[in-house]
Length: 242
Ligand code: 9WO
Image (cartoon, rainbow, N blue to C red; front, side, top):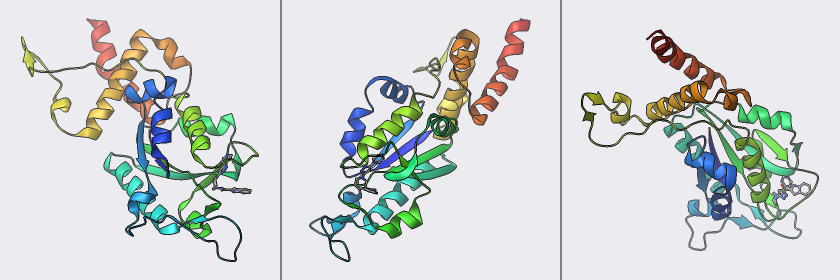
């Protein structure tokens, strides 16, 4: 699973997720994070990301164009990393209240699924951007805060802590061969999606063999179950029959 966040304050997200369960899961490769600042997609010298609301009234509204560019770049980065499906979620007090069942559904997505979380600031975002780009609006509760970043962090934490803690995959460094024992070919292939899949499969297989209790704590995604089944076909039988 990969999660990208479009936010005017990427450091807020990047720092906070490094603590505790989400940070360890990030280090282990159980999820990946991308951060995108819409300000980086503005060309004018003032780097304007907001403007006054049509019809008047207080405050400022986030411009559609920089957000659309940031979202497109986030999705392109997800695809480039092998993500086959992506959903864009907007954190909004007017969204569907988040419940555990929805968290579990979001967390059960496979390694090839991604989310883009859109965190707003100011009075809000141009409605046309929301209409054309957002798949789902999610509320953490019936209250308003000053930006979508803290709600986005709550959503990330809720999703990631549902992902299983797996044992580490095997590691290799030089040389490529020691007394006839070779580094697995996939690790030398430079094929990053295949390497990630192999590592996930190794982690799943080792966890099944050595700490099955960890896998009982919660359901695996379809992709994870297929990877584990293949691992067991390739390893389980032969080693046991030896
Ligand atoms: C603010 C607002 C107030 C009343 C009714 C609907 C509303 N929508 C928004 C809104 O989307 N605001 C944007 C996101 C821009 C300002 C900061 N934002 C925000 C998100 N404030 N609070 C949230 C939020 C998100 C999820 N769960 C709780 C609060």
